[in-house]
Amino acid sequence: MGAQFILILFLAMGLMGCATVKKETITQLQLQVSEMEHQLAQDQQEIQNLKSQLGKTSNKNRKITSSSNAPTAYEAKSKEEAEVIKVQVSVGQVQIALKKAGYYTGAIDSKLGANTKKAIASFQREHGLNPDGVVGQRTWLELKQYID
Image 1 (cartoon, rainbow, N blue to C red):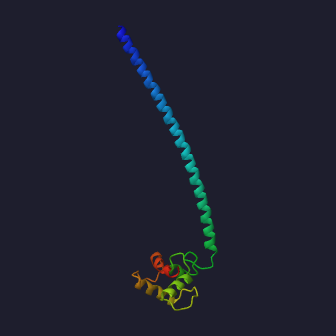
Image 2 (image 1 turned 90 degrees about the vertical axis):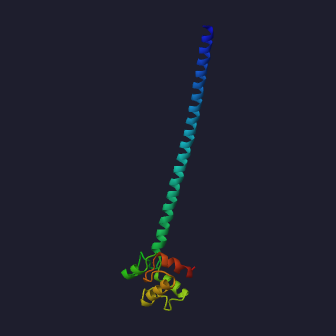
Image 3 (image 1 turned 180 degrees about the vertical axis):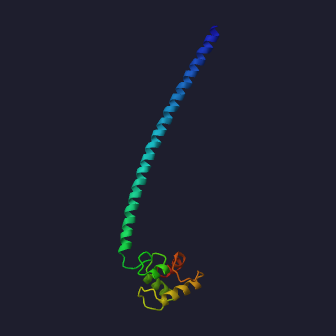
C-alpha cells in the first residue's frame, strides 16, 4: 500500500505541474493577444491618418482641376467635345500633341473643328487604333508621348 501511495503522490504532483504549465501557457498567450490588439489599434490609426491625407490630397487636386481654364472631357465647352475627348485633357493639348506628331497643321485654338477630328482619326489609323476620331484612354496614351 505504501508503494501505491507514493505512486499516487507522484501522479498528483505531475498533474499539478501540468496545471502550472497550462497556466503559464495561457498567460503567455494572453500577453501575445494583448500585444497583437495593441498593434492592430496602431495600424488602424495609421490607416485612418492615411485616409485623411488622401482625402485632403484629393480635395486639392479637385480644386486645381476645376480651376483650370482648359476645357476637359468633364468640363467640355460643348456636347460634341465631350463626345470626342473622353479623357481628362483639353482640346488644346490634343492639338499640340497632334501637331508635334505631324498630324495637325491648324492653329492651336482649343476648338474641336473638322481639321482636329481628321487629325485624330489619321493618328489613330497609323497607330493601329480604332480610327473613330474619339480621344479615349488608348489614343491619349499613344498621343501624350508627343507632349512629354
